[in-house]
Length: 178
Image 1 (cartoon, rainbow, N blue to C red):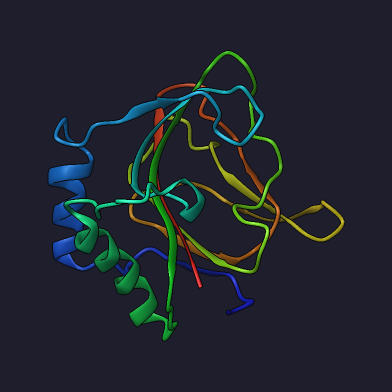
Image 2 (image 1 turned 90 degrees about the vertical axis):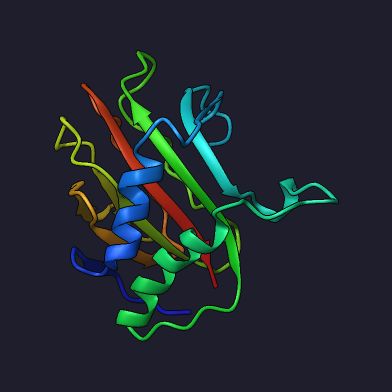
């Protein structure tokens, strides 16, 4: 487990960029309505789940057809920054947009236990203020990350929230791992 925050705009291989452009950002990649962006918030968003949280995996879970391509994206980042991982906990693509309910998600951590998180911004959203906000232990703003296409942001378990776009959509790939 690393405790530092790493941002990088130049970690993706050409193969990973090609996969993003020719699968994720096309109509070949289906997204499904989720009735909660964060547990209990009643805020709809769109999600494509690649690897569900362990507690949601069915007994006969079969890996996603493109699982290895997604792992390559995580590996691109971790290899460049000399980060070792031994377990991927969750992989999902989230599309957030103005939903008419709230401007931001509730403060949350993705798991109750120690983990690392990699966010990969997949598009340049119209609303450049649709940022991710990390909080310190006192719930004060610690760091803010503005979306830029292909930017990766990695951090350890920290409370955070997102500002939803007021216009357009924000595509983000989320990995949690240890």
